Image (cartoon, rainbow, N blue to C red; front, side, top):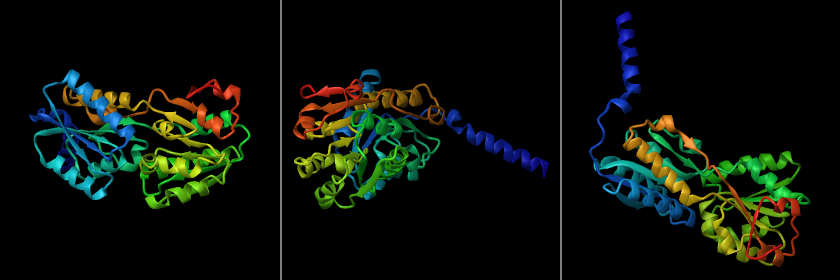
Length: 314
């Protein structure tokens, strides 16, 4: 019995060291897997490719795109796992990261543009960059700019794990500051405009990191353009569509940091689980002066000190 226990213990120890003991992979490709076409995700992709080309030009990067489809994401994950030429994968977005977490058990997976890594049930071969913007920081910043608001709507896609997870945190922080919170879920793309109008019954609308809504931001802005409630987003790309206020992570930089993590794994042979998941080091706050003026809104001067004002002055 004692001998059996010793043997089992040794097996467990050796299993934990497998990452370090296996020879380095001989393949010459990295898989770059995008959840869908989206400005922020495209910036991550470009940052990753630029850094890899500059620091490891001999390795090829193969593009895959799930186009927002879970079925496609699962197929891509299986393909990546089966191809020996691929030594690691960058997964951009939650959908493809979830698919890889279910199927890829050995190759290193670096994630990016995932707000909450817990929703993908990451394994020990996963590491990467989150785009998590602290919920308390977002609500406090909004209140510093608009201290008189009494209610806020959270407009989101319930089927997006990233978005649903962040909405829970945002709602908790908003209620803790005595704000009335309205949760407005958008289950179908054709309901975006009507849901946006419903959300605007509150003093302000906050859209978390949500691929469906950011991709359809033009529809959100069109539906709410004549209303006074500001549209606030947790991503700065909607500013060009007419968002009033936005928080911003530098996604290009996030892609570069993800590339650095990948090279630490495949070149320096660091274990992904020892690197873990890294939050963005800097978050910007942007105020769209043109839209604020069009809506007839007045922002607090002290709150504006922490923001960058674009499209004019206030």
